Length: 172
Image 1: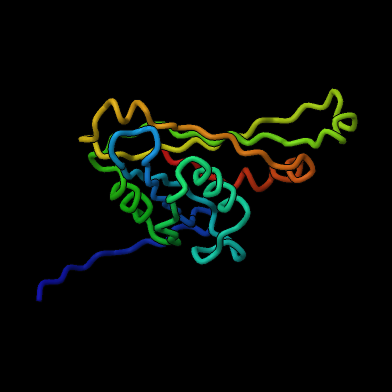
Image 2: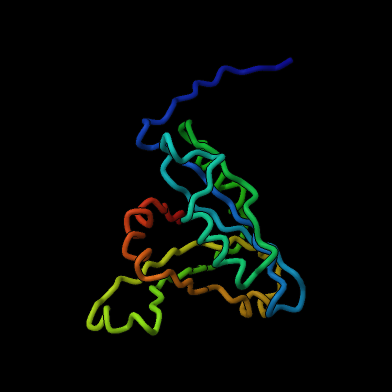
């Protein structure tokens, strides 16, 4: 048996992450079904680990499911080691065509409550992903992919969402 010595270096606690991969089943707006992958990360904490999904994860998946209902999480992985994150990301990106996929978050206000928020302003939060696609897909089909969606959150929850939004780590 061949073996080699490899030194693993553990990341600093503040650099540890949870990597999430969503598989998109793209069968709307295209001639033939395509599969793509969206990757993002969140900080690893004592309350947020690979086995957890919170309201941010649920919002991201439900936003995607509004357009591509068969999409699902396929990877949720704690990242502890130097180089591990890059290795997993490369597995889903190597040789792939990357296109932007954006989820816009906006507040939703009931008609009865409009007067309470007259003149108020709210930030629009954007989750921006790189959607990995097989480079051999027909370019006309790729051009027809709906690569954005808008998700509405009740205004009172929206005001509390900013801190949770900051835990989203965009992967370039």
